Image 1 (cartoon, rainbow, N blue to C red):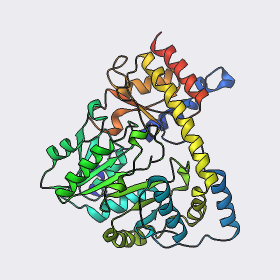
Image 2: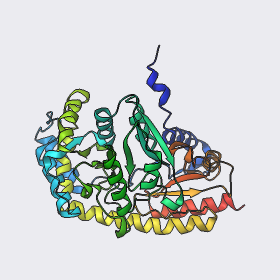
Image 3: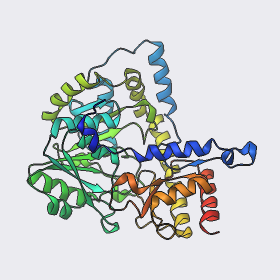
Image 4: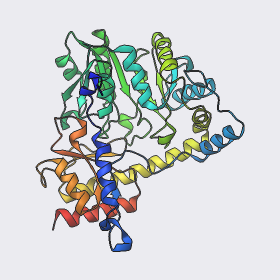
Length: 394
């Protein structure tokens, strides 16, 4: 079968490839407690161990029983768009009219829609290295090129305005940023993000900011919303992380008004609408009880971060930038291995701990760093540290 040429630019999603290996090992006697083994600990996937808040589950049940499962508008339920708009006003102090909000089938669909609407063959989009791999593949799927710009701990593994200016070419169409970031858990300082947006704007480009970890911030200095920087900023968001609704596949975009109709047209043709049941349920995500539950969870994530970062450093796994958001640690393994791929594979087999090597996130730090997700319980994190100590300091 002849495949489309665009597939040549789409790498495997190594996070999931590693997950397959971990699951295979987990099925072996070495991970069977009944046979004296120790179960696999999964710190490789960026998925909260918390699920949807109770009011969301109740709203989903009510929608099912009421038969509210028909198609919605391609841009989403009006009630949900209004609740999102209100959340921006009350939580972030930003005026975002509901008409600029498009509900999508997860942030992934949102990124696909924006990239399809804005980019084409010959365009370049600047992104930091490291960054979430699927973001660059959304760009590549349009025929454009994701140009990865190496970053360092000095810039918190993020692009800054100087790097954007230095790497801008006549082909550059814009930037795709993430704050807080996957895999580093680091955010762009608000003043620096403003400089980036101003620079992009002055060059006639577009600034797309992935804010799917918005709300999961642990440092007030970084707890800002990119939409405060102007109506021309494109924000991508999701119910998956802060609200714990990964499998519900629901996200949203905030768009400049001129971009709403083109994106709506694409959504109508590509998937009609996001899940109606998920949308009806998500209205309840903004109830006071739901938000209180999400804030309790945020405190739990912060406690986990405050435990795991110094624990890794004590083991000799350097964390040059402490994560200020999300639930990831970007750690240096060079004291123990030549490259992070071998490091992660070895620990899956011996410590029965699943980590994510840096290969997925860009070439600049692929060998030196690995990602650990602390979106799991404190007892599992403590067991992880015990096993790593056992294997790394034999």
